[in-house]
Length: 505
Image (cartoon, rainbow, N blue to C red; front, top):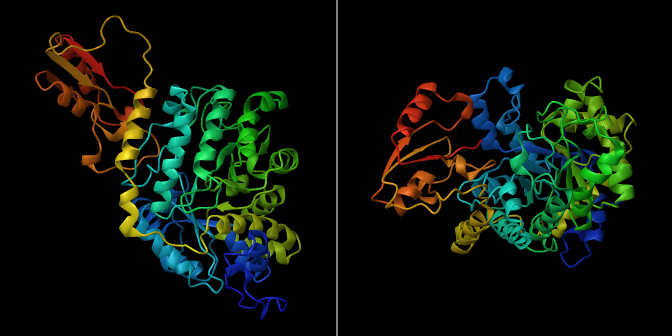
């Protein structure tokens, strides 16, 4: 993975237009592009997980366990020193799973050592607030927000999330998820806005606008509409399984929210894990080129999902090896790879072998650099640690989260039980996996400081201190509930004045 140090003779000695903040973005992109080596270009198309994530994954997973783990990553045979070196020499264009401002600024400082000082763009799964990182406001999940039908709130949450992200040097959220949830067995329904294409479209539009603003200020972040397409109606209900859908169904049900997101200005899109009608979405030229770019005129860049380009070979088996999978994906329209060490080596080889034109690589790099310039990363690659917590978890943002949570409540039926009366109910049983656990924060949320979270049980005891709340702990994981605890709850329920079961996933 040696980095060629030469630049094209045409670039030598020319004024560095790309460093001029007053120059048009298009001119800055073209100036920088013609100064870059092939290796540097391919590096801009590659994303890695953060160093601290790698350390944690190495400590908890074996190499064998890593093969079937879709949430954590490290790179066998690669050291953190290698990651440092590649960042310093321009071989990495993006990171994800960086969860602290300190690490983000550190990795950015490494990027500033590369000869062209091209900044990193940090992506993160900020699905309902930047909740996947500690010390950020946690808003209701997307399905909760959709339950309120509050479009103004969708915009407001996205706008506040963008501010909190930039306060910790994050620039790119892998949201909104505008898949139309059509199979209740599918485990990611809570990450979506539900089953109605119209509502999903409207929520997606407001979220895109809220995140991105005009993509020209230090309070804007890049939105990513995902996952394109069909993964929310898998043939067996599990995430990543094949989807078999007619073109009419695609155009009437699944395409509209993505088209609406493109028209709202979304500048990145993530393809889906699944294969669609036998063709993996990550190598599907009809989706990425014919529909997205030619029909919808999408100007942004396409990013893969977690190791899904590799899965073209080892899961879908439509490419004989990983190198061939990279070839198929790039030629079908892919711009950025999430994530891994073989990309740089194999893609450079494919270009040198004449299979991928360098002009095709240039197309992707233009799209990526365009966003980095527009977000002002060349002028402001770091975030101020002293100012960060003045924005994150602010009173204004917490108040928004509370209002949104209240508006998301859906009452299915009330036979005179509500509102609860402390005079009527003296002895109350509370149980269920979400009764006294941070599970209630929803998916894509990190463990937060205890003082920043009020559980259901704690809240009940706060508002009714004279009531006897008998709690039976069922643990946090419905897959590993203890039958003895379930039986205990059943027995105690018979003697209680009221039973409160806080269920969920």
